[in-house]
Length: 172
Image 1 (tube, rainbow, N blue to C red):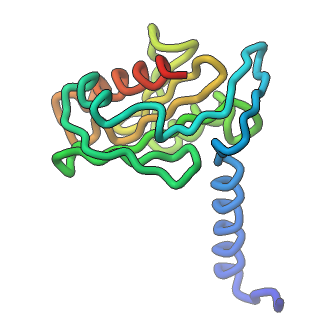
Image 2 (image 1 turned 30 degrees about the vertical axis):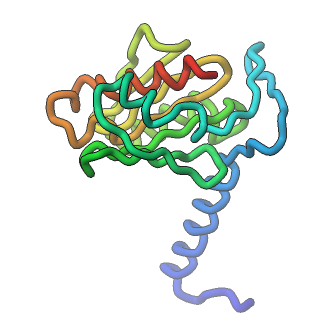
């Protein structure tokens, strides 16, 4: 393959490769039962999208959710009865970057412009300014994104995100 001569094209290709590598390294598979030790906590591989049902989620949050879909990895899209209720969550074993607490906090700070520690949920929890909420618990990192973003009454308090994270943690 001939190297691109345009520096912008080279930068775009390097960025695409980096994003692909990060995406692949953050995936977990439910087909291999295994455990991992992180900080003295043993965590089994879970199929994130089958941890909870739309009915359990609806009951916990008080919003009608109709589907939870994933592609066999840790990324799960949630569909609400209203398009503004759609969000996604990720449940990953904590381990090597980018699945470390420090890396997750850095991503939230980069994406949302700030991060604020939240007490009372998991071992550690942090919320961004507008859309991302993460919890470290039981050897996992749980990330909930956009659950409150389109709902002004809960947008600044992350009320839905906290309920969702607590429900997911209870299933680990």
